[in-house]
Amino acid sequence: MAGGLLDNKRGNRRSRYRPMAEINVTPLVDVMLVLLIVFMITAPLITSGVSVNLPQANAKPVNTDATPITITINAAGDVYLQNSKVALTNLVATLQQIAKNNTDRRIFVRGDTSVPYGTMLKVMATITDGGFDKVALLAQQPTPSAR
Image 1 (cartoon, rainbow, N blue to C red):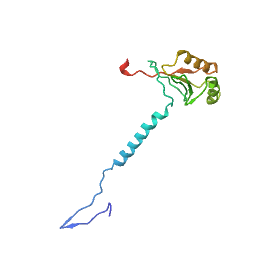
Image 2: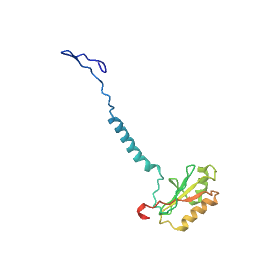
Image 3: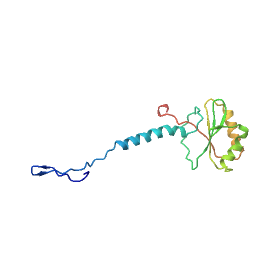
Image 4: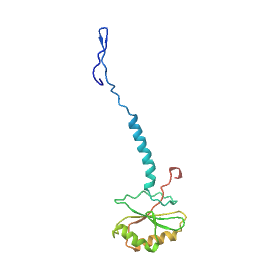
């Protein structure tokens, strides 16, 4: 009988079976390790898919209320809206579709360090000419050893 009494007569002594009061944490640890691995793999995939070498800046991060729209300019000068390549002439129309004509949406512009200043300015001017005024440049935070 699990958890009940067992009568073992050894002379005049009666012994009592007592259930083990310890919790087996091995399955809990296994589940937590699997969840940790899943989050470690998926977290980098959540960020924007176009890889660029961002310049470093000492500016403080900008707090945002809504999810910003990300525009990326890679080393070849190609313009990406979120993860899809877009022509500069169609950038404003596509932005208005994504933002649902809400020109108060925050737009982050990311550019590779090798992108010319004129190209970055042309992209930002195109965005502001389209009516979007909350445009910010993104930079990589410097590592503590670089300060």
